[in-house]
Amino acid sequence: MSRIVVLGAGVTGLSTAILLTRQGHKVTVFERDGAAVPGSVEEAWDGWDRRNVAQFRQPHYLHPPAGQLLGSHLPGVKRALLDAGCAKFDVLEAMPPSITDRGPRDGDERFTTITGRRPVVEYAVASVADETLPIRRGVAVASLVTGPSTGNGIPHVAGVRLADGKEVRADLVIDAMGRSSNLPKWLETIGARPPLEEAEDCGFIYYSRFFRSLSGNLPSCRAALQTYFPTFSILTLPADAGTWSVTVFISAGDAALKKLRDAQRWTALIAACPLHAHWLDGEAITDVLAMGGVLDRYRRFVVDGTPVATGIVSVGDSWACTNPSLGRGITMGLMHAIGTAEIVKEHLGDPLALALALDSMTEARVAPWYRDAIEIDRARIRQVNASLEARTETPHPDPASDIARAFPLAMAHDADVFRAGIEMRSMLALPREVMARPGMVERILEVANEVANEVANEVANGEVANGRDPMRAPGPSREELLRMLA
Image (cartoon, rainbow, N blue to C red):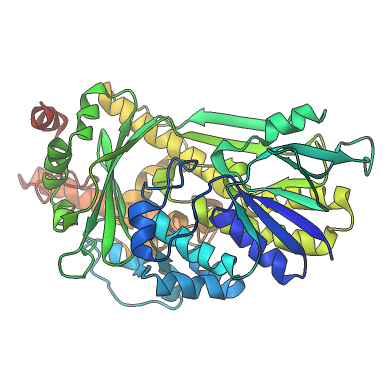
């Protein structure tokens, strides 16, 4: 029986451990946070202390692929999520009223997900894991233990050394320590080459608040879950047990909007947005929660075709972490956990082959979603900063830019283009896959041109197009916003 050590008892680490235990491996999880798993959902939300998880009480979301992967690979975890009150949510509920074709389509079931608050999701996963394998909470790992190289002089990890000095030997160590993983420093200590690393501050600050329904029903979606305004964005996320979160995120350089930390000002902003004001119709169960300094970060542990070390792999946020506003972390972590279990099943006896196969799987299956998130972040911060500086971004004169500008307008008026856009936002299909579909680009441009012509005709006739710019959700102007926050 192979021995595997997993470092970190978050969603990704425990999911990986459960999958590997089912393969017949002897798996032990070490978690530095010492708090025991609470006895109920209420205790998880009210008092669970996960001090090493900075975003533990910030908004979280599981995209539709997460529910599908749980159903196919971790059905017990999915049942536990439902038993904990996690919400089933159909993303098509966010279809705007400007789309008149509301008829169903074949395959619409793919847009349904299951989601909840982070403490509740972790509670459900941990409850299943505790019944499946040993989890040693309150045990910190200090360093890596090495063994004979398995090829080409590459350092080989043969276990870990705990903070108390005890060595725990393993055939494989899995780093699931999240954003704060110490793995690069540990690798340097054993003489490994540094992994490739890319990191950049996405440039956003988040101001979030959680609510509970007074009626037991979640608010209806009258706009996309994530809605862009010129200098801020609003993110509304359904959760579990009749709860939800509302987040305003701004540019870190926008000093005036940092006043949104104040609950009264924050509430005034949401109330001034007609498609979002009703998300305030509940009992506030937190104050405004602020978070900033969030990095998009990616690491690759195969450099120039050679692993930096064997016997150890990195999964989930330890490997790559993204802007929380996109809600991709847990979904990407589950993708990575399942792919990692597949590679371990095939290659555990050959450490070099395992490292190379894991790198290949990660780059093909998960890394494209990281790259996509980076592009979304960069494009959005450019838009916000251009608005703050009262300048217009100069569009690139190329077909790709034309499509990018036309897509949001077409998505708001055509049912099939809307579904295509939701596929990308929901991690069901990458942009390149959607755009490669026959007729998709032509349809986007056709619908956008039709809407633009209708607006131009209304303006020419002295009419106002619904009283607003058709490309923007209704909300306060910058001047109105500053007066509101004064």
